[in-house]
Length: 323
Image (tube, rainbow, N blue to C red; front, side, top):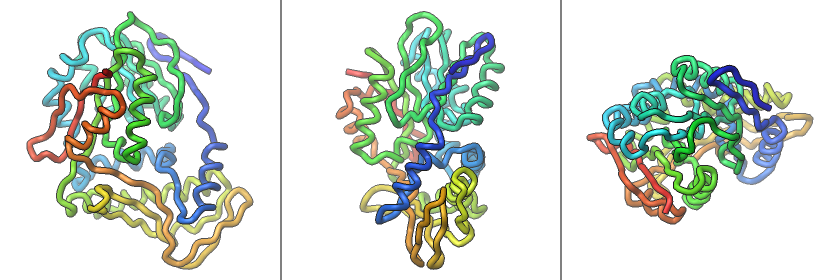
């Protein structure tokens, strides 16, 4: 289904409630329990994440934005003119504005996100701010193969944009599979601009995911609120604690929801039991050295062309080209 007006079109590939219900039933029915982090981003979760991005402890967003602003000219030179920019997990479409202002005559911008209303609003605002740019919004689960609609403009190359260190949410082998999927989506000659968080002092990482304002905790627990809202659940959300820490041996931050007491809940008519202290795993966020990330890209069929970091080497932005 698509609707459009002038330079804006919306395509709904219907990543729906059924897949969410199936994931909840499967994840809470196994041992240990888990919930996929891609379901963080309903409308409320997306808004909470934007608040997290503005926190003083959460260095990732402001650092990546500073890299993009400082290196916009070099990035635009790599991308070249008439490119069709495809952003996966577009969110509020903030960072891509830096690129669009720097690019030479971009042919189209494609925003892909799983959060339907959030995507429609954000992409619509961007289309209004860039009236000469064709904007296409695609509501889809970008972690799974999906088709791109026919794109407007001349046949320039497709460049994938995947900012924000979301690549860290994949297991390393899944990073390779995801990048291969991106290569197929973008087609021959496709290129990628991708953000990846770097390894650093554990104290910095632990603070970023355990902020003093409690926004990370609210974001994590919103998964339970979403289950209650969308799946007729009766989970007592207050009886689950936010747990996040850097596992240095595994090179990742791990997020959990921990049951404060023995309890049970009904979700879409099905009962689930939680022991005191039992954890639901909600996210991993891997941190990489530059060499480690380049090795994953090469396994996926991409050649690292350029890498940019901030002066403190907190974060990295990589430009990759298909071999």
